[in-house]
Length: 166
Image (cartoon, rainbow, N blue to C red; front, side):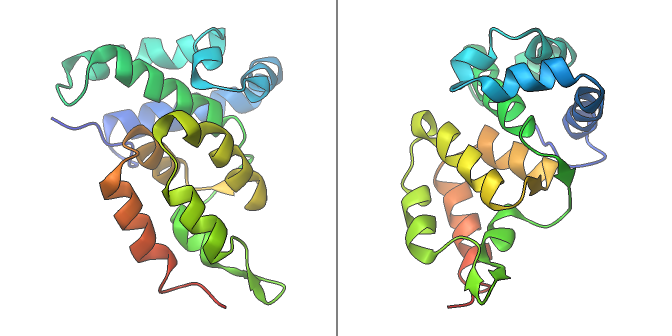
């Protein structure tokens, strides 16, 4: 079984509910936003509120070791703390959108992002969220970061390049 963070799926509903609660917890949100890595996020109580809700799904999922799924969920939680306004558009499509006649995210920066390993992804994704005016699809962000790898890279390339204005 694979965990999906899409709306209407258990993990998607848990993450969306946690994110809405985080909007009311400015202290917890600020602490998550100060974290520089998923390992730092794992030390924050706000992350553990999400982990406690997700633990059963993560432990029953056999797609990755439990410790790795906790670490990836920490990355998701930390990055979602930077989102101020949720929307439904795929992140790669939003990166390709025109702003002032240029793409929000240049092709060169997009290609650099596609080369990031999971370990280096966290700070790069914080910059992406800021570049997108702190607006992102919660489910796309969660799915993409949690499962960051070749399939996500290909999906993002298929969403970015046909939509980019250069």
